[in-house]
Image (cartoon, rainbow, N blue to C red; front, top):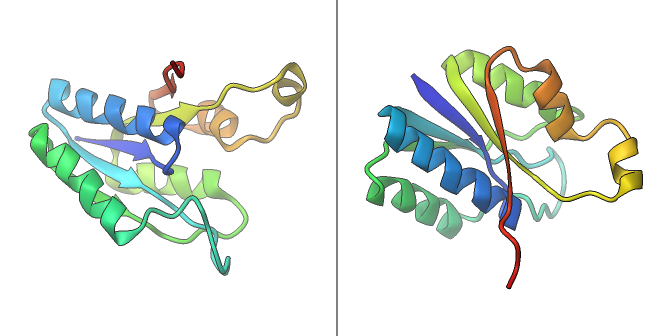
Length: 133
């Protein structure tokens, strides 16, 4: 079985990665790290660089977890891309990071995390980044 981890180079992405690696080790499962930039965007801060990708894979390897990374470009719907890959690899678990949101932000629907939680047909583990000191 495989664990699918949503990753962007943010504290929330790091929290998801750390938790996903720990779950992979605990369950003796491999992990797939999904880092999906928007197709056609000239610059995308969510895209991990080649150096970052190498560092992510090394972190998993150092923890004793087999890992791969996927960086397919998505068009309009990252949620569908996420669920399609979870289906393709038959993920046993999806791990995503959540940001803290204001009351107004919580009211507005449509966040990718919320849609993944509601639409995925497999367990989803949502984690928050630790507090800054």
